[in-house]
Structure formats: structure tokens, C-alpha cells
Length: 86
Image 1 (tube, rainbow, N blue to C red):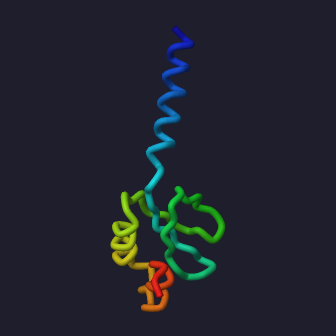
Image 2 (image 1 turned 180 degrees about the horizontal axis):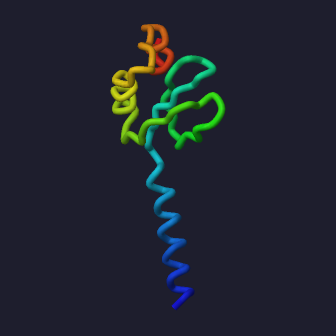
């Protein structure tokens, strides 16, 4: 019985990790004074002073970043760099 419970816990833990794929977080970086969108769960330590999320898409994370008061607005050049367009 203990083996069955242990196997179930391992299965549940591995399934939970796979759900994090494709998610996005908004993080505040104290060193740069900007808010970035990242695709891994942030660790709040050092220069990273807050994390918000997860969001299902990068577009959702961008909308959320625009509503966070401490995040400065992006300049048009920064938006182009972030989107990867020329």
C-alpha cells in the first residue's frame, strides 16, 4: 500500500511540473528598474523584488505588466526589441 501511495505522489509531482510549460510571469528587476516577462517561475531574491503570474500567454503577461503601477511604460524601441521585430 505504501508503494502505491508513493508512486501516486511521484506521478502527481511530475504532472504538476509539466503544467508550468508555456506560462509567463512578470518580474520586477531592481537593478535595471524595469519589469520583464519571463517563462520560468521567478525566485524572489536579490535584484528580483516581485513576481506576478502565471499567465497563459505572453500577450496576457504584457497586459498585466501595463497595469502594474511600479512597472514603467515601454518605449517604442523597447517594444520592438521585445517582440523581435525590426
